Image 1 (cartoon, rainbow, N blue to C red):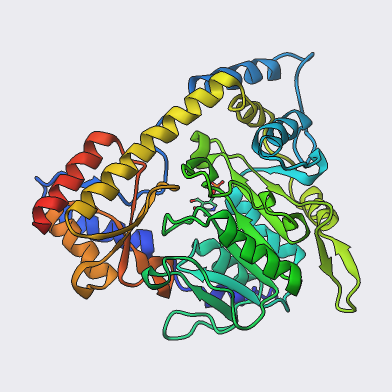
Image 2 (cartoon, rainbow, N blue to C red; image 1 turned 180 degrees about the horizontal axis):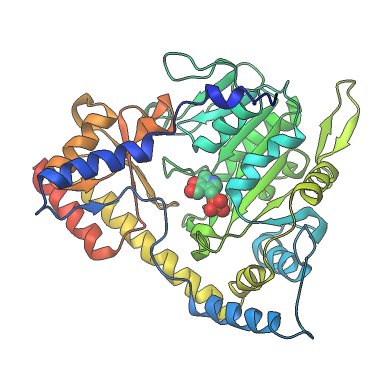
Length: 410
Ligand code: PLP
């Protein structure tokens, strides 16, 4: 008799996006003439840059020739990509890393989800609230979350509220956790931390032997100079942090799949007896056992974004999305709504007007403006009273959506 992992049964149905789809479909049935604009999507809409496409074609041709064909690659990824990552994403910012500290993967979702494999069930986990749901759900699967309480919190997870009242700057927890997930620039709130705010966390982690799992999937969208792109820009961070990066939003790889995780050699975990263990060695063991590497052609495609032309193309796409973010942010603020984010991230976090709940405001936007957002409460109890809009749509639609909301609000 195969017993199941009962933890999976504790997870509520992930109903957020299906519930949205259901409500939109019902509205369409009764209002077939309405042109619905979706500002809820968390996926890119611009095609891959031409330089990436050319690299893919070249790599595919290599696979067709016995002389250049590649089979299994290194589980950790090819050095050509790890070296390009180090040069462009780290050395350019004064951070030194070696290729053995970079683990190329099929994306940050897998890595942020799988990292728990190398951590004990007995760790006390802290998350910011609202949060990218993968951190919570994978800790439920990994027996670290306890039980779901009626108010939407998990009994064993420490929640660090991020809300308008604290300007979305998480406060250091009163009770010391063992592991903290930080995602900056943040999904869903679109807010960022300055270097001095992030330094506070690194110093706290150094002092208290806390591991920071730093998700920097949106670093490419940073526009302000005092916002760090990598946690390793902070002195001492290599001793306390694992960093996750993704090519998904940076370069349109959501369908192609590539990301990477940095596990510095000087980062240590602990055995129950206090003995230090290199987390790099554990993650290497985990990856070489359970993962057989990212496709060669995809790694060549990722390498291409670091060429001068690749950089120009990637930057142009990001500028396109960030212009959408500006239109949303400025338009909604002009309409008298309270808006956050959208300066260093492609997400705009709206406070619902008149004390409405997230779903109530979602319904108003859908019924009155024919615009779809994502109810903030879907990202955790701390998201109640907010709604997330994304900048990944096309600009004419974004402009029209904002005009409709303005008219409705006036
Ligand atoms: N981390 C955050 C904060 C995200 O918002 C997302 C995607 O939405 C991911 C990770 C997943 O990225 P990937 O496509 O590389 O798996």
